[in-house]
Length: 501
Ligand code: AMP
Ligand code: ZN
Image 1 (cartoon, rainbow, N blue to C red):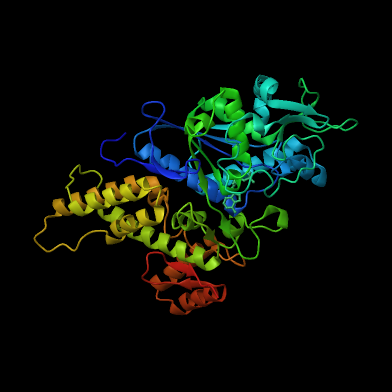
Image 2 (image 1 turned 180 degrees about the vertical axis):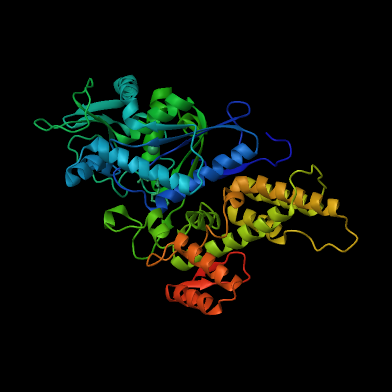
């Protein structure tokens, strides 16, 4: 661990306690995050889960742990109901669109990766694609089948009564809770789930493989157990996902991991396959536009189309604790954007003043305290709303007001020191202050009838006219721009801004 940071405490959903992070492998942090099911675009809420996992990863790296982060891509096996009823989500979408399932998976995986990039989420060490691991899934199922599974006409089922403490992670009643209506004849327990789904006789699926239990496809829960165990090794440090996964998907992963590793009760957290299970709360929206099944749903692209920079959404996420519900609103997004913009502007001012060529640095207790406060807040179960405050203070403060006696080289040294601290801390938040400009953060109306290069060209013409003292032309250009929703701002380095009605 980096010696100048405080210990990291994280809330473990399995033990329901805050726990100090103790790596299983000295100096390392191994993290698995449940990835998206790529049958559709990710909605904004899904992306909250990956901003959260990214902040966790950045915090672990900041603290000096060598991070191995794995995020999977579920391109097969996730049914329309988490508890093993219904159709495969990808098969269903492929049929509806009359497209190949592989094309659907590729298209939505790439769309997800574009959102990941736009939100400045770091790429994990590995993206594991479920269909690349089918042979390993079959091996895993073969290993646990004799003691823990039974076969029905529809597939190979996991008997949850064969492991200790089944469902301890879940908050709902697991035996007959939501989504557990037993529709499969012959299941021994309502919570038993398919780890291999046989293709019904007379049908073919676009994605199917041979197995000892007949042709078919793996169950969704099996996929994550296999990919996490294969890449990170059981037990690994941290497993993350959204709170919906705490109810069915993760209890089922845990049961499989116990079966595979021959571990017993969950009083010992590592017996579950991971030491810490973490869950982000939901992003909600009053009119229900956060559910893909509702047809029209909010995507990152929706906010970009409305003219918002995607990092405004990252700021919105950071302003809430990951374990709190976050309500989406356009007003909230606007406020997050303005907050980010103020920070970017102050940061640009400091960059303009600092001289990176000089090596001079000074120690300022104010800066040191900010770094400590940010570290303490993030170490307290990733309390980003609290951590943002001292960071913001440092950024907005910029340079102190110097009196005339302060020599130029001292001013420069202070600027350099502050800039360095801001950039180190910004790395943890991932707000990208250094490479985002005020112009990037302009809200761009979708209805714009003029492009930005055209605006810049018109302003250049106006500048020439003014230089030639041709004020009639200069005014005419300004009026034309005003009519197209562009406010010309003489004397402001930004030059112009969209005037939103
Ligand atoms: P899925 O593609 O449905 O498997 O979901 C991808 C990730 O998004 C999972 O970790 C889910 O738990 C998470 N998730 C789903 N809905 C929301 C939401 N409204 N807010 C935050 N996370 C969500
Ligand atoms: Zn998963």
